[in-house]
Image 1 (cartoon, rainbow, N blue to C red):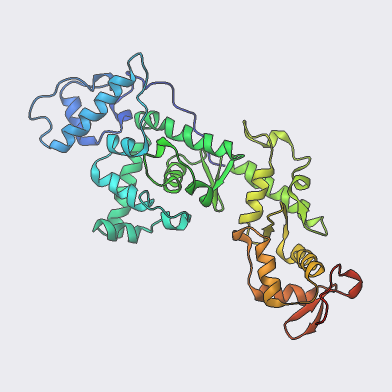
Image 2 (image 1 turned 90 degrees about the horizontal axis):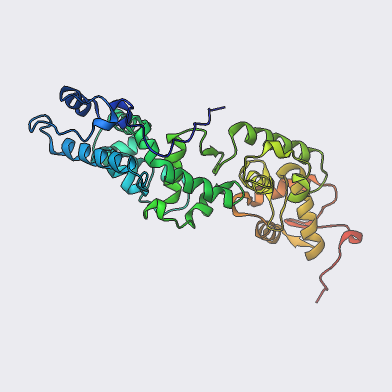
Length: 355
């Protein structure tokens, strides 16, 4: 399991070494040459020629001003995501993160927020290797104590949103989040960035984000699989969640049911219905097809496929080929004509009348 990092304290330590600031080595070298050695020395005036680059001077002034404000009685200033990136990164490094994580991309799908190094390099006008170096430099900066202190409101907003949703959030739910912490940027991209910044603090598992640890997620998925394997029909989520130990849940998450729903939707071999049941596709989906045939009577494959998918969450929907296999394998279902299926007469509750 990735270690869960400790939350930073209320303000950065003024006695911490300059490296904790996240400032580039060239700026730290100029500060040390001027006699600065600690975070508390950032505001010390530098000789006019100590930092000839205007961008370096601006970066130092921003970080020094934030540290001074953070050390005051009012505590660290709260920053939204774009303010945080602008404060600690050069424009080039901030652009690399914005592009790589699709922070300006309004789409909900996580895949739209995960550029390859090749794509990121193309958009930046550099090679794949240079894109990797820029991203590494950005993370090397943002993982220093002072930038992490400043990021605490961002992690707090992400964790609060996840807990309010039962401990888990997927891309469609993220797309609906509206919080000033993201500063108008994409919540999905923001969650990806934060999850990569501190692995274990905000966990990405399959295709969703969670405040559950990776060990808790693995154990819960195993328990879910064991319960489904012992069931003959699709099971209500409340039944599946029963008797899972409270010790396996993170603080502030009262029930494992939201996690079980998310797992059923995103595990490749399971399904979740809109009426809050779930099961394995191979083992339990035929039971759902029998329910449909009991309601509709004899029906063509096209109708069964449409009705089957109408009852499921979008991530779980299947094509007619999968359903044709399930229909042909279940002894309760008989094929009445090419592409048409029905239950034995005694199992049907409503049969269509011949005209």
